Image (cartoon, rainbow over all chains, first blue to last red):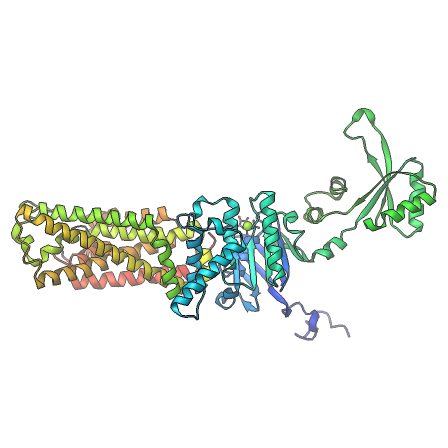
Length: 360
Length: 261
Ligand SMILES: Nc1ncnc2c1ncn2[C@@H]1O[C@H](COP(=O)(O)OP(=O)(O)O)[C@@H](O)[C@H]1O
Ligand SMILES: [Mg+2]
């Protein structure tokens, strides 16, 4: 029976589909999370869901509000409105979940005059790492834990050098080591690959994948989707503080409309090819491609038949064309990657340009 | 809080910082001892005559230390402001708050460690000042037998307590400036500007205000009230109230404000 207009449903009636009830597997869950700095709304009614035990990406251009959101999740910044829960506890009492949370926010920040190891020691003392054992044991347990995390991030060799002398990559790794100190269930990293060279980025990716393999929940932000799309199971995309997309990476890709682009040898065959594919149940259209755009003296325009189909169908489509006596000058598959999806979603690039630039 | 206290010693004990601070304080203390001893037979800063007999009294043992209370206060204010504000400006505070989200516990541990550090600094200064006073006394023919007497040691103890408390008062101002301004340079500049020129100007323009200006009262308190209009107990009470208010403001701001640095 449909509810009468204007009458809100009784709470709890709608059961599992009720978005106001926190799912049991949520590591991070927010409703209407908002932060205003003066008149500026920096984070705007975010409804986040970060599943436990997965590697989730948090993507948005610079200034989108990622760091501000993460700061709210860590109790560093007070939300202006909305509610947020981390590991089942409200962010208003961070002491209830931060003992199980490791974090690096907006770059690695340590004391430049202290060695990497001493910096970790300060944080280990603060966290009470090795608590519960005797005094001598405690010190040993702390030392061992520090050595462990240093080895984990590959910094053991330079641990006794001053932080000020570290390269950016080493600083980032020390930041991750510090976040790992409490053996966290939840690891929150803000742009850990920022400023790294490709080799450094690969190292961090491998490290994150390994950590995720141990069952740790990881929430990692980046302003570049390409840096996290290969490793993430789950993705949150924001822009100007608002949610753009949230869900499984696979869902996003499936929603994206992969295409196969064909150029028949004879222009006249284009319509016939489109008809053949159409009768096979594929949605098709014909576009005029300006293939010689870069060579103005050789202007040669060929019609392109575009079939909306995943690349797995390319061979079958080729076979259909051959059976119909149509020879193809070229056949290309185009699977837009997440970056293009993202750019299109954010309106930075129009679909056509994205498609042409990203053809594979 | 004990965790926070212990962890704060890691940066405080870094060799460069420790050596720099102790060297500065030793120099200040040496200056105080020399000026005091060599002023025998002439006049002190305020133009009052200083005699060998005055310095030979039991309280003479700590005259050198007391001569530099303001400078020790400046060191205490600077160290506190630089340490606390540095955590904001470097961004290390956010790491610490993730490790110890209970903000007041974090602050209490830090402040306690800084207080012990400041008292340590005063003790170091006392050692230098007293040792140098003993060494230089024969030059001016000042007898030191009363210094080493029981009442001399009592005078030294009282002086140590007063100078330590005075320096801690300066440190409270440094902590407040650090939490408000969140930048070491700004905190030290504003803290010292207030402590020295601003109060002096105010008391010049309106002299009765001197009885209520906190930094001035700290100085009065530090030297045991001798030679000032405001009595020792009253100065102590007013300084205590002022420090309590400043500490409350510091704690409130540290607890309430967003950590965006
Ligand atoms: N303390 C602050 N006061 C005012 N504006 C801020 C403050 N912190 C961040 N902002 C603004 O909020 C926006 C989002 O910042 P941020 O969360 O750092 O974005 P991101 O991490 O996605 O790059 C930016 O436009 C930034 O200028
Ligand atoms: Mg950021």
